[in-house]
Length: 517
Ligand code: ATP
Image (cartoon, rainbow, N blue to C red; front, side, top):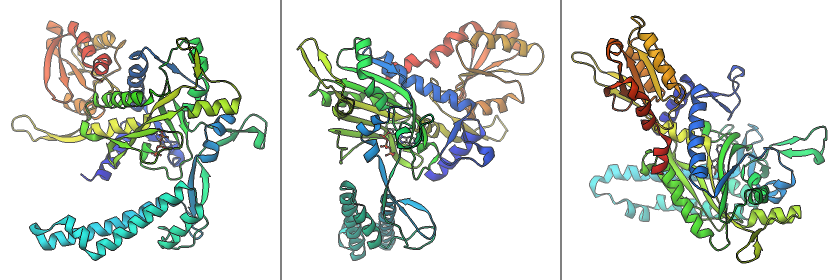
């Protein structure tokens, strides 16, 4: 299956089964905004809970916070977002379409790369076994010419972006003769910086004085509360503050489903430590975070660390954890060593000291910070797309096999943990099944289903990732046993009703997952 096709299947499956709906769909939707449905919200909550517990309860020195979305506007001056949280934009005067200048150039280079690949494929066909790609790349004049152009554009773009030279960016677009994909014309405006923060007005105050922003990241809420938490919680360095919350970015090109939205949720943790120890903690968090991901069993080969070559001005080390999404390897989480940049800036702009007093050395200093920042929606997409598969199920003797769609979500994250299915809707089986519902409903999110043949009910549960189905049959009435079916192996086991609670609790246990991470 083509990777992009898989994304389409995942999107339609997510909609069909109540995981994710386009926002305000009855009004034809709003681009890059999505709503989480009845199963989506459960999955999302389970991911949050896994992260929150791993961060806070598993670390005695990490506490939580829930800061407000609106913050004093000076926060964003201090953090650099007002001046530097920008994308370079260019408009085509004929189509009136707006593009990110760097994305136009990236697309141009990708096209040249595709041309090179075409030459290589042609030669491969021609020379067969004897073909040596390395040698071909090093000698073929067409390939050399295209590669030289790519390298040149890459170098010029990097220099222009680093020095915020918008004229150079525009010149490069002209030099490459890039045309608008919509109108085909090269009638471009100048390149302008576009700030990604959403602005609104506070109360009745209008004009610049009342401008307030929707936060573009949750981290600043943690920084401005650093001393509040440290003092009231009597926290000693090193310690961390974790937060889950909404963030807003006016992304120009928001696409790829919930991967890039204008309103999304982040799970961020800022870890405050002594200057000089930050690299040790940076490495600690790199290991801890990848272990958290790997415990889910989504395939270690599906994760990659990508070290940032060009560091943001405030960082002294940074990397991304990339995941193999249906669109390829893309950023899922960032781990950044942010030095004392944020706290120092807030000291400067607020005039208040944000220092830690070390009782052992009698010194006070601005701590260094290592941040881990993961997009909850991206994690949701990672879990859902990794879990989605279709497969043939062999039929019983003499019967044809059938296709099933199954979401193999880790049982601890699965939105519904158990389905209770009376085999038939008579003979007292529904009543017995409801007794089991009452036994389990306090601790597990479950579904009761008595419609259609049991095989179809299994398929419905497979499609939403329910790890266990309990079937109540006539034997149940005699000996108080039921069958429990495993979603992945489809094997059934007969167990006593009395043993059900303990058995399911063990199978869907979050603590088992946390112990692996
Ligand atoms: P990208 O390069 O993809 O724009 P970023 O480097 O700007 O991401 P960060 O500022 O490091 O992202 O934010 C931390 C995390 O928040 C990212 O790793 C990602 O998981 C998530 N995130 C960022 N922007 C979006 C978005 N528009 N929609 C959904 N999640 C996002």
